[in-house]
Amino acid sequence: MAKRGWKVTVIDKNTIASGASGNAQGVLYAKLSAEMNLHSQFYLSGYLFSLQQLKTHLPDKQDWNNCGVLQLATNEKEEKRQATFYERHPMDEVVKPVTAKEASGIAGCQIDHPGLFFKDGAWVHPKSWCERLLDHKNITLMDHCTVTSLSYDPTNGWQVEINSESTLQSDIVVICNGDDAKRFTSLDFLPTKPVSGQVTQIPHQDIQLKTVLCGDHYVTPTHNRNLNFGASYRLNTANCDVLNEENQSNLDNLSDQFPSVAAQLSDEYTSTGRASVRCTSPDYTPIVGAVCDAQHFQETFTALKKNRKWRFETSAKYQPGLYLNIAHGSRGLSSAPLSAELIIASITGEPIPMPKAQMDMLSPNRCLVNKVIKS
Image 1 (tube, helix red, strand yellow):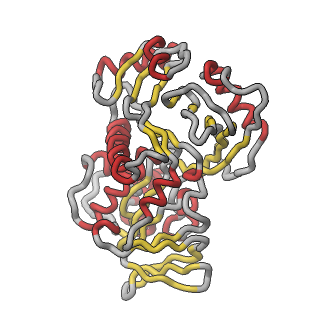
Image 2 (tube, helix red, strand yellow):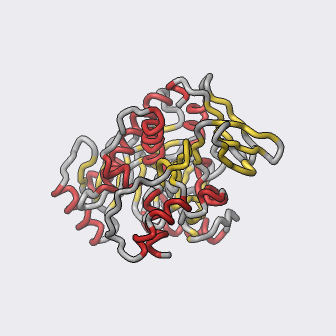
Image 3 (tube, rainbow, N blue to C red):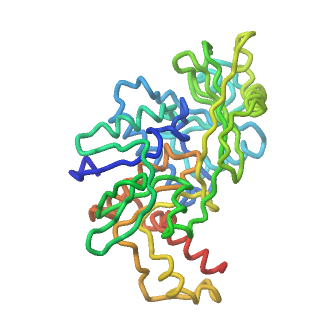
């Protein structure tokens, strides 16, 4: 928005990238289904878009590296899935199959499984990217500020109360605060859920690893001599306590899935952990776009409760200038930037950066439809 000349205020209740985006290294690639459905098409587009954005925003590559990502087939089921995917959708310019021997040459250490290699897949220090995006003359950052209420005035637009002390006015509000979004009355229909998890870091390590390795877990090449790997999942909780048992579980998974990396750890090391919260939706798809008036929606489309295939002609009533960009789970590096472009296009009237079917897949309206059907 700032690049398009808008004056933007970013409000953060803590400091920038203090949540899941505060992890030392995130992984950028796209896990694609064999049938290449809408979900996969969206993430493939998002992955390629994010790569291009990183090359523009962080050209010196000090805080990211497109060293490639090896998505390893650590069991027979995954190996068959990957083979089916490539047979149906060959795209060597983006991703190609590799043998265990070829994977070992790419990684610079022994790999015991075949897999798919994303030649431009990357690790990213998310906080550096966030800081670069905020470094713009049209952006004002308000950190350590809590939005205590959000309301709409037809005359003055959105009223955003900060710390119960001051109020900002704006024509446009974009909510990007994950599971916290549903604490606002107009968004209490959201079915999001928190999933906290823990990553592990071992400092002072020089590991021979030239690319990111992914299976059920991941490990990245060292950055500033720190090895980062994980991650655990704690379903339906926002607990961010660092647990010794989860560090041990991450270490066990490292030894099980990437033994040649684990074998390089020094005899004496101290592992540290960092826990944070991801926001997910029931269908594991981001929730992005304009927000409807939930009460009006339920009253207008109540027939969906008896017949989910009911065809309607009335348009939904939207809340003026209110947008969501949440529920990116653990794949926000691939999905959030392209989702932001969708919102911008909706606001400014620019061409939509994806097919309408993908836009509908992301729409917050699907949450309201499901709520009416299940009510």
